Length: 470
Image 1 (cartoon, rainbow, N blue to C red):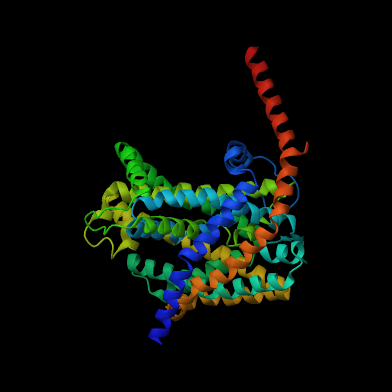
Image 2: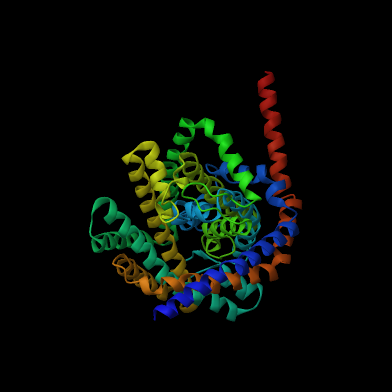
């Protein structure tokens, strides 16, 4: 049995190495070129249409606001990968891995934009009047390949059971280590909290996450900003360290064993993709429910999701670790998962360790909230609305079972199951790339959308100038 599990782990490591990284890199580059490098050309406009419109009335129809859809999607992506994944990338790939995390984030924006645009374009209303969508819908309606939609939906529904178990175990062991509370108690408490929210549907999830996500991100990133202000002189050195190691082998430094250039790139790409989930097909399920007047406008929110998750939260983690120097200390390689906690502790003492622990608990809890919703939507697509409630019960039980360690035997299969979801979704995005291109062109050339927004902007500028002259 041990030999079999080791074989599974080895195959999983190989699959999530060169094969899948190459596939995501090429498909991301292809979509970036096909869409005319829109994420760079229109970045200012995208920020204005997302963060700049948070307090404005949403345009078009939908079930939740665009901001609620974004925070729901971010609940899934901002998680343990931001706290544990970044130090792993640094320890196994060197500081230069952070640069490649940024690169794959910028390229991955095109994939995340495309899948979210398709999710809105092919969404539909369910029996409760809620908008539902995602890869299973655009595979069925856009490609006329219902069998592929069923494959994706069933694979995701099943994959989320052990995934939720792992999340449940993560939160329970963290609470036990910090507050000495038994695993089972934490598991039950988490299950009750999750139940209260998820059984209220996407509207309640949206209302919770729009408060929860900014709050938890502010606590964590706020702590990193305080460290930045305490240590402003380290900023140039931080960027020098990253850029100097991005294109050359990372040298041995104290507890850091060094890394070949291939490893620098591989670890940066792998952790970046794992963090923002571009191409995985999960975030579009949340974005499909958003109020919007055009699929492309909601796609902008998906782009901002990558900015927040990888370019802001992951970079904050990297700065704290690299500026503190904990990554070069003896034993750092063997204890990479604890580096973020040790780095914050080096600046804030015991309070720093508690801050990271509380952040991790919030991050994981919010992830469980949204992935339960994702799984329920798969059951709804496959078997109808009633089946979604049954699946939610299964996921709630998985939280408790995972908390006490019941998923340990199947943890090795998680990445393989994720690949079974990612591969068909990326293929679907590429096959529907002409549709994404047509919708993007329509948005930027039609008088109803981009051109109208630009005219309004010019009118507002003229009004402000006239008022100032008076």
